[in-house]
Length: 356
Image (cartoon, rainbow, N blue to C red; front, side, top):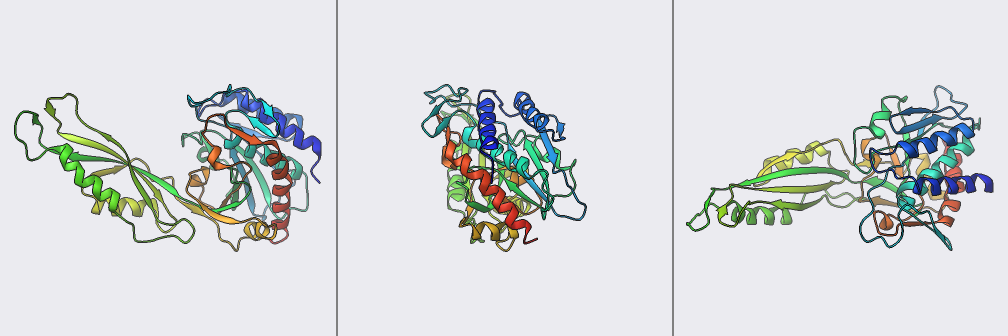
């Protein structure tokens, strides 16, 4: 049984993290809070920039390595907040504050789980906990920078708010910059090759295009034009229109394949910003998933991006909280969600350990 003391300590840590601003690439103070946790528990840890990690006490070569990961950076609070985003206030069962739901509750729950299992000798897995930075910005100094410091990870649990259901697949992301050209000129003169008008058919193409492969878990690839920019003044016909296209990639395609398809078929010039944020998944036959199913957990496919995108191993996204609260005004998590998550994580890992 998880001690009430450990759960209370995890919730108190979350309150401290809420009250410590930690925007992406500015997480140094919340990293110190994680350091203090490990020092107080006498658990050796390592730090690289604002990432903190630690291994279980009885690490044995030959056992598969299970990564427990969540992030301690946040987005900036939006203007619709009615509460102080940096005040960890409790109202009934609700704990309010920026980062409480995304993903502070997940982080402290996984940290408490790791602490509970730290000195167990009967685990089927080696464990490594990573509290990572720069998840919200997909920055270069986040989880991806830590992976090269670790032994090869065999499987991962990524803490994101899923109501403790099991996201067994996650869409990847490719952002494209597009350009539609035309003939520049004076607005008073006739012009049959205007970039803005040429863009109409291009936008219709992106709206109507469908990728052939549909995932049984993640559904179709979703492509959305999210930005259109052109022109400098009212009487000048611009030479080009710049577009931004957001493509959410299912597990039937690699990001490279999406790039090749669109560069060949799209009616405008395209350039991918990055191909590193691929879709991710884990087989339903994996011990972690089988353990979760035996506990009454459900599986689904997630449309939102997380640090799973930088992992090359099978990964499960699972955590307390609700994704619909993420990045919302007056963000909150239920205290009871954390109280339920910690023993559930422990049970999941112990059940899976017996199946390895």
